[in-house]
Length: 113
Image (cartoon, rainbow, N blue to C red; front, side, top):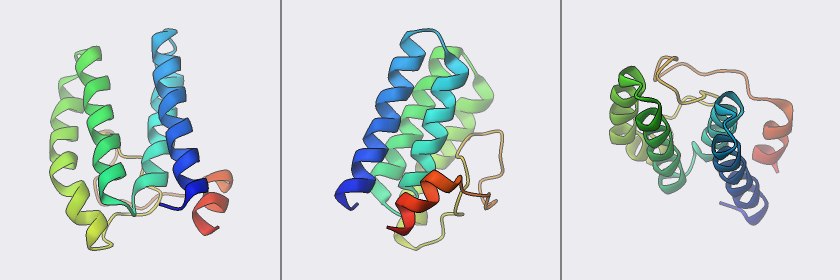
């Protein structure tokens, strides 16, 4: 990851943690989704986000999310290495694992830089 992209990725993870600790779980999840979009081309960060999403699901006692994240943890690394991660996909169990999605403009600018 280039330094500017890495900084944005880490900032999204920090915001997710801070939001969740303040009880704003919807905002926390949005930041995890944004971190996921930024990480998709990089195996380590991509798996890391899915592990964070798994932890989020664990703390919420969300069985659907836990099962969905287990599957994603297994395929995230190979998907990134092979360039098969569907761009823009937000990474949660509420979306298909192979569905590309629109990328928010601010994230697109970071990814294109």
